[in-house]
Image (tube, rainbow, N blue to C red; front, side, top):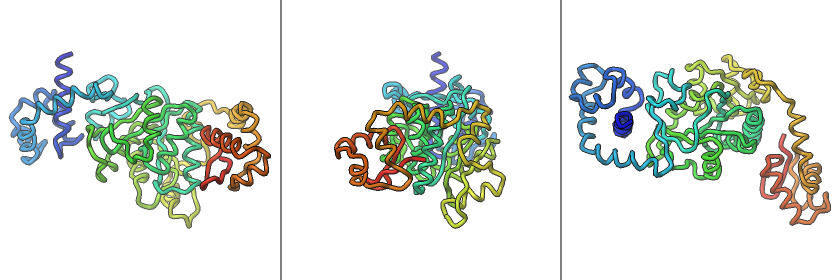
Length: 367
C-alpha cells in the first residue's frame, strides 16, 4: 500500500511538469516499469532511450527540487474531496485504457461512469440556437430515463443543456473539465457543476488550480469521446470543438450521431458534413437506444404518467401553453389564475423540464 501510494505521489509530481504530458508519461512508464524508477534514474537516460528531449530531461531535473511541495499538495487532495485515480488503479475507466494518449491519471469529484452501463456524449456549439439547446436537453433527459449515462464538457450551450436534461431525469451525468477540478468553467454553469458531484461526477486530467487555458480544451475532448460509447453532435460550425470530439470518437472506433439542420444555417454545417461523411442520423433518442440495444419504452407512456402527477394548477398552465411563446399577462387571462399562482406553477413546470422561458416572462412548451 505504501509502495502504491509512493507511485501515485511521483506520478502526481510528474504531471505538474510543464510539457510532460500523457503520451510522454506513458512512454516513460512502459520503458522503466515504475514511477519510482523514473524518479531515481539519471535523467539523461530518457534522452538516450529516445523518449524525451534534453529540454524535457532538464525540466525533470529541475522539478526534483520542488518534489516536497508536490507531495504536500498530493496529500491535501483527499481533504478537499478530490480522488486521484491513476492508470494503475482498478477504478481507472476501462474505456480510456486502449487510447494511446489516455490520461495518466484523473482528478475526480463524485463518481466515474459505470463500466457496465451505456454512455453517450452530447456535444455541440456554445452559442447554440434555442432548438439546439432544447434538443440537447431533451436527449439528455430521455436517454437518462433509459439508463444511458451522459458525458459532456460542461460548456455553455449544448454541453450544459445535455447535462441539465440528464439531471432532470435524476440520471448520472459527467463533466470533463479543461481546467482544474475545483474550478467551474464557465462559472454560469456552477449550479449544474454542484449537482453533478452528487449525481454523476466532474473530472479532469489537470491539477487543481490549473486555469481554463484555450489549449486544454481540444485535449479534454479526447476524454469526452473516450468515456463514451457514442457521441451525439447537436449543432456545430464547420470548425468547432464538437467536430474535434467527433474526430477523436471516429479514431477511437466510437459511433457518431449528428443532428441534421438547414443547409443555410452555419450552426448546422458541421453536423450536415458529418452526415455526408457517414455519421448516423440523429432524429430522436430512438436511434441511440437502438444502437445500445436497449428495450425502448414509448415516450408517450412515460410522459403521460409524469403529466398525470402534476398539481391541478400546473396541468391547467401546461394545457394552455403551446409551441408559440406566451407572455405572462396572456397566461393569467387565459387560465384565470392569479399572477402569483401562475408564476409559482410556471416555475415548477420549468424546473421539471416541461416548459421553458424564451425571454423574460415568455413561456413555451418543450417538444
